[in-house]
Length: 286
Image 1 (spheres, helix red, strand yellow):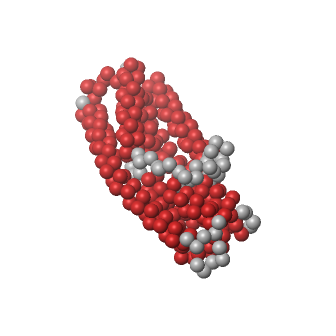
Image 2: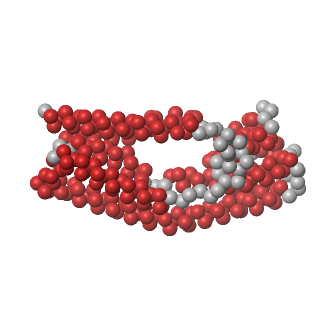
Image 3: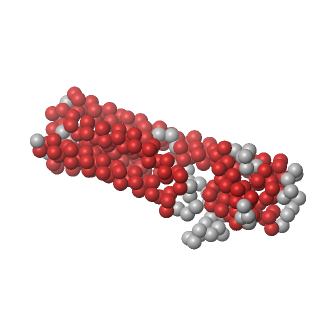
């Protein structure tokens, strides 16, 4: 009976930690200025299956092994390992955004000759902008239609995109809004080419760093297979973990393993280049 109570307590504790972590991750976008609030609202249903799978895995491992610490580690592994060892979706989104900015810059260049100024050019591209940045371009165009100043609208647009390549294009548009120039079209074309070169360079660097992620996957798979094999085929050898001290040692070993995976992920992460139009502490672009 005590074992069952301990297992349920361990599973409940693990599920509580997962819920707290999930809630905090959804809260972070709300704390950032000018972020899309709908993004945090969509994450809750998407997180429920993962949380349910983590709870089931934690309870099953805890019941089958009699180790509350094992159940907690299993639940955390279900939540954390896909993010640590899966594809770098953040990098993929950033790369798609850079390509979209390059395409939009070329669209602006091609539309500029037929439009009556920068503002009308932006409005004309709202419906045909590349998909990754189309919502932000539509928001910018809607603001311009309803009386938002071009300077203010572009600065808010820069905050919404939060991309160094987009900053270059927006800076050129800001300068053209103050001082109209016949060279804006060729400049936008050059900026589009620069953005594509940056995307290619980041893709090559990411490919070289992908070896670290592959190494982490191999190490994790071998470790999990070894643990499962020992538990299934030689349980007496694992009897030391049946004690309270053994459970603490298991938690410590799991924490060290997780720290190693986090280190590998940081080593494989490609930091973004510095922004030209970064926001200061008060939210104003400088």
